[in-house]
Length: 113
Image (cartoon, rainbow, N blue to C red; front, side, top):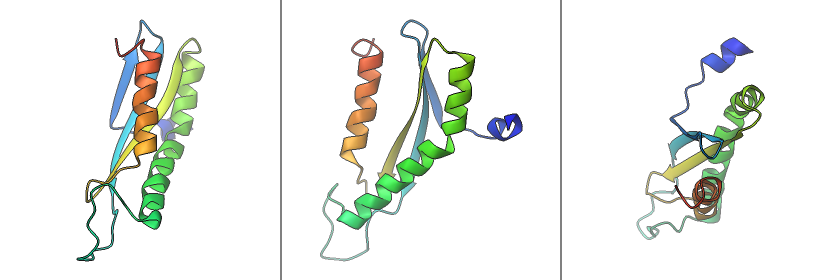
């Protein structure tokens, strides 16, 4: 299991010694739209396309779940979370997840300190 965890390479890390939090950051791009000339709204993906964005984010969180748990065991006094930021090829994104992730930064670090 340790060897499997060592092969994981998240896109980034954010941590605060002061606020005792560690974030595993993952960014991903995915297909977000069918190429149709009459459908080209910015960040208004169709329901099935939004589901693809959500699924990709959940896949990333699941991929790093064991790593997050291992870090949490090693640093029990810290809050450890994985944040997945997914952007579609046409720049659409799941607004609710982005707001939640960015809100966690603010909440965990006393208004972004």
